[in-house]
Structure formats: C-alpha cells, structure tokens
Image (cartoon, rainbow, N blue to C red):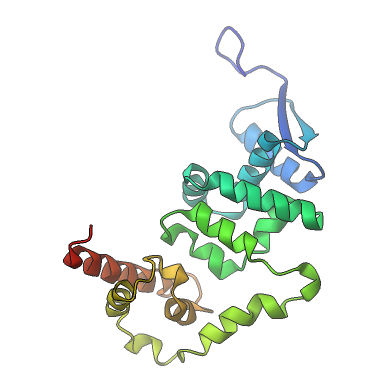
Length: 213
C-alpha cells in the first residue's frame, strides 16, 4: 500500500486469524520493522488472514533464512490448511500450533526438500492435547532405542543413506528413524547437521549411480 510518491501510507491494515492475539502482535512487529507505520490489525476468518497468521508464526519460530524457505515452498498452502484446521479444532493460535511441534523436528526443517510439507505433516500428526505428552514422545522414544550414544560415532551415515535409497526410502534424513535416533538430544552445533548431510549425500550418490535421475 503506497501513495503517489511511492511512500507507504501512514495507516496500514493487516488481517490475522480470529483470536490470534499473539500472532497479531508478531505481525505488527514485523510490519513496523519493514517500515510500516500506525499498523492496525483486523481479525478475520479468511484464507488471507490465516496465511498472514501462519507466516507471522513461522517468522517468530524459525531463523529468517529457514522461514523464507518455508514461505516459498510449494506446500505452504498445505501448511496453512493444517494449521488452520488444528487451530480451529482446539482453539489455538498459529504460533501455538507450530510451537507444539517438537524442537528437534523444527530443527530438521531446513534439511528437507519441502519444509512446508514436512511441517504440515508434523502438524497433522500432533496428538490430541487431552492425551498429554505420552503419545507425542512415543515414536521418538522407540527410535531412540535403536542406537546407544556411544554407537553413534561408529555409524557410517553416508552408507546408511545409500541403503535407504536401495530400500526405496525417502532422501530426507528427518524421516529416517536411525538418523532421528542418533541426533535425539544433541545440542545445536554438536554434529546433528553433519550427520544429516552425510545421510543425504549417500542417498543422492546411490541415486546417481542407479541411473534413475
């Protein structure tokens, strides 16, 4: 919204999902940081409002470069849909929905081909809040038992990636149980990204060798 001189108008109106007070605050902060002035927020239950709300939540929860990848991904619309349905079902805001995804899963977002698709699947699979945290941690706990901490350094993750290709498994390291078990609980900067890079490299090497590009 610009005037005839090319400058932004003094009054700007943005739409956010109904009841999303924290998301509205994030939207206003982002707009003001981009030079918008006297921003006013209108609550609407529209597709545009939900896209604004999810975009604000993504930017609040993820680093700027990762947030940009998510917003530009082909499946961003699917992510908005899953967040909207979850938010409506449990009276949550977009930031609450995305914030319910486990931290380690959010950390894997930048390592997958379509981060929005990955997050949409995570939102879809979130447990019912009434079920508590037991179901949420069940899959990770089972995967964590596959490998001990001492054994992680002995795993050839590049070879693991090759084997995953041969077995018809996807290239995303975030979807491999052994990779997830290996990086579970790893502090940021201690090797998780390197593990995922090795797995991905091995998968793509096997793919290239197969002639199925």
